[in-house]
Length: 208
Image (cartoon, rainbow, N blue to C red):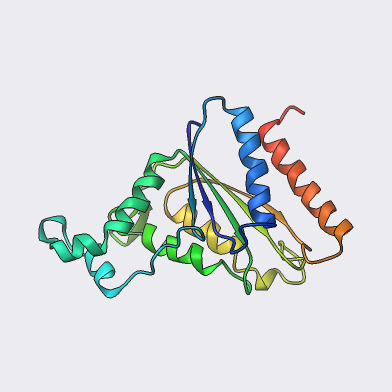
C-alpha cells in the first residue's frame, strides 16, 4: 500500500460516525504502511457536479472527435478518474441515507464510472480498468440488522451497491467495516463503534 485515496461523503463534517471510522482506519493504515501517501476528496466540502447531457455525450465520443465543449464537460470526470488511477487503495466513508448512498457519493460515482476509461465493454462482457488493488468502505447505519440475514437486509442498498460498483471497476479486494444502531443510546453507540474499530485494527494487525 503506497497511495491511498480517501473519499468522504457524509453531510456531517462534525460528529460523523462514518468519517470517524475512516479516521481510525487511516490511522491504522499509516501505522501499517510507513510512508503511505494520502489524498482526500471530501464530497461535501467540495461537492461534485452532477453529470449533464454534454457530459454523457463526451463519455461516448471518440477522442479524435472531441470538441472544446465536450472536453470542458468531461474535465471534472478526467480529474476524478486521475485521482482514482493514482491510488492503489481507496477508502470510502459513507452513511446510509434513506437505505442507500448519499447523493454526494452517487455524483462522484457517476463521474468516475466511465466507459473506456474505468471500464470496457467488449463482446458482451464488462471489464474493470482501474488499477486499484483494494478498497475499504466504512459505513454507518442509524438502525440495525441491515447485514446478511438481518431483518432489514432487504432494505440495505448501500453496501451491496458500493460493492458491485467497486468490483465492476476491477477492484477485486473490497472490505467493509460497518457500524449499526448509531441513533441508539450512548452506550449502544459506543459499543457498536468499538466493535467496528476492533475489526479495523485486526485488518492491519492480523497477528494480534
